[in-house]
Amino acid sequence: MYVGIDVTHPTANSGIDISIAAMVSNFDLAATRYTNEIFAQMAARETVERFEYQFRRLMIKFQKVPFDSTYRRLASTYCCLSRWCERFGDVADCFHRAKMHQARIYFLMLIFLNFMMLFFVMEMPPDSWTTLTHADPDLDVTYTYIVIQKRHITRFYQPSGKDDKGNATYVNVLSGTVIDNTVVSPKLFDFYLASQIGAIGTTRPAHYTVVVDEWMLSADQIYEMCYKLCFLYARCRIPVSLPCPVYYAHLVCEKAKEVYKTLNSRHEFDGVEELELRKNEIERRLAVHEAYPGMHFV
Image 1 (cartoon, rainbow, N blue to C red):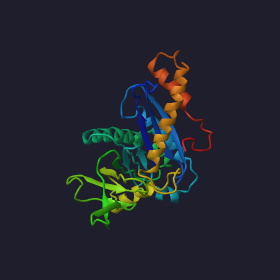
Image 2 (image 1 turned 180 degrees about the vertical axis):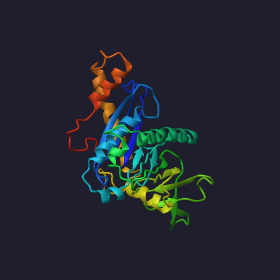
Image 3 (image 1 turned 90 degrees about the vertical axis):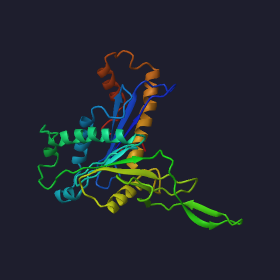
Image 4 (image 1 turned 120 degrees about the vertical axis):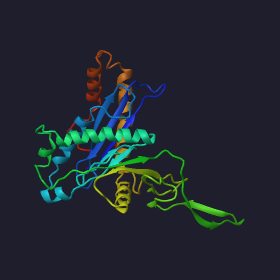
């Protein structure tokens, strides 16, 4: 299960007065079909309010996928925090985040892992983890939490010979290039992955930092996993610069923001003064009907 989370904040003259968060997750083992949840947040914050409730709903949707217990044992659950964090596990979850100071990244990691651990130990039938896994003793949940940063100034090139004047020339690195030494932290497990094909301009690699790794994946397994996620983006035939759930969460946020701007311009929410009621009404109006068969954000 791959889950991508993104948050969009209001800017000057944007026409919105709230932050909108989106959580996207797959509900098939091929990780090609996704569903989403949308949150309205009154405060401009990076953490997602009511995260555990929305994540439980996504887990239940994934649990309804008709595959037998053998595939269930082999399936990996991945959750992504859009543009941000990632964590993998045997029944693992990954989150993607970006644009954050390192200390803030660790702070958010503790918050979200705490939410997840509470979810997995709570006995709240029919939504508890025991119910979701049919009390299968082989499913021991582990966490690998990886932060992905897109906005940085690090670039990589490879030499391509010399021009007519004898000056050295350089081109973009190949898709799938991993840089895990020299320019990375001496204390953290971090690396750069240039997953996209730099057809135009300069390739900007994503910076990955493995914050927690309970699944005990090898470095090569993490590289491969992150790289393969970049091939699943439905809008493009070639690998993109970030795992596809990250992009999907961003698209959901942008679409929800435009819908909210239209509704707000019509004064649709003026009659709702109480904060929680207003948030619930906004989420209800922005939500996609459960019977909708496709991925509206693609």
